[in-house]
Image 1 (cartoon, rainbow, N blue to C red):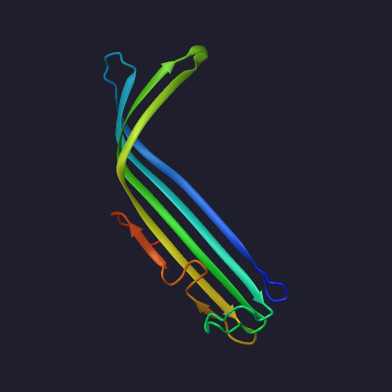
Image 2 (cartoon, one colour):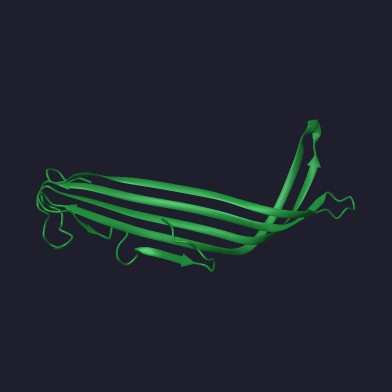
Length: 169
């Protein structure tokens, strides 16, 4: 984030993604010599993702717009920092059915084949937040609750699905 002889700065991106799950199954074999085992159970999956974008700009040339007075440039020497935060949590809860079979191979090896189908619902929680701070030389720092991508129209938390949830921090 730079402009020759006017602005110096940088942008930092940070992203994480975590997927985990758990399941519990009851297994039943028909007992008639068939190599099939039938499964019935419950599955939970959780996907957490985060994206953070931070920008720092030193406007030593006075060319950036003043966010409090659009159309007017910042005073030379102003420092502007902006941060955007996006968080998404997805929870799947469902029942599942499946089939398992095993076949012995040569030299002590075996082949296991499992097929499962889970049906249920997904609950999604999305948090979007952003902020900008402006520090003109010799004046107090001011803060605004918007970022570059996280503006007034999309800041906050949204929830899709029927499960209850707690606010993410």
